[in-house]
Image (cartoon, rainbow, N blue to C red; front, side, top):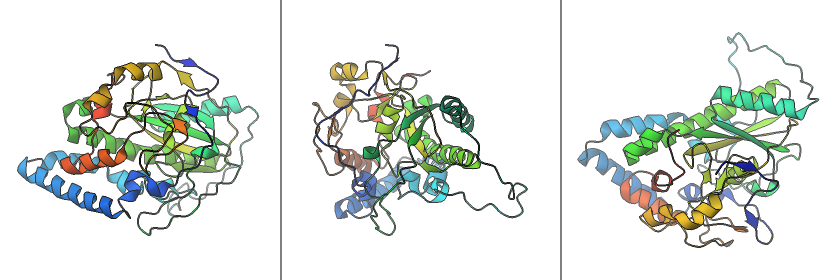
Length: 342
């Protein structure tokens, strides 16, 4: 089905929405939840055993290198508290010997938000995004608190109301790597996360150079999938992931929050919800039954947000399987019929 624009996104809010605390995301829990810390150690042991027993040194070396920018300058793939590294909310200091260090830009006048949006999307694609959409920032998608994995701080997020727009970008993950092995799939996932930090930081700096505020974000600060749905990049699938018309679920998401006046995109409909009702391939192929048969607006674990009718994914089971195999799992992406080579 060809995607068509619609006035409202297809997800259905049931009762009042509450902002979610980043502390309770699965990867945040590996820093404070004792049971997840134990699993984290098991992941490392299993990984080391696989490298030794299956002679996978080169495979893991390639995979780990793909995550390097994400895990260093990208502050652990944007799973940290945000406002750090390439995801800093202010421009990073430029070395004095840089030829451009003294350049000062005047604030650009924006008389036509539609024109500004076209230029912003063009810049996002130039920097490396494969899809770019714009939406008004729904405050319910902003985390209630950030969580610093290193210090344990769980501080409230209070964004200034000037940040009215979110520019959401999707980074394609390589189809062939997904088809080769679990380690190959993890390598292209890591590369996606490294590109997220690179692309979002460059776009944010472009906007700052125009005289406006811009906050680059990975998986921090706000929920990426509902923002991407609002921005017209795709729909929510049974596997809990964004399904795009171009790449299916084979994308990683980042965003820039800004006070620059832009023209929002409309959400889209290309039949994902109806297809997922019948398909169930991700459900049937999940080795730990982490994907739900039925929709609900209730949280099935503390790591699920509530209030929106959807097929919730049991991230506890999912992460447990990662630790059993020593690599992150991508089966629900690989088997999705929307995941086709373009």
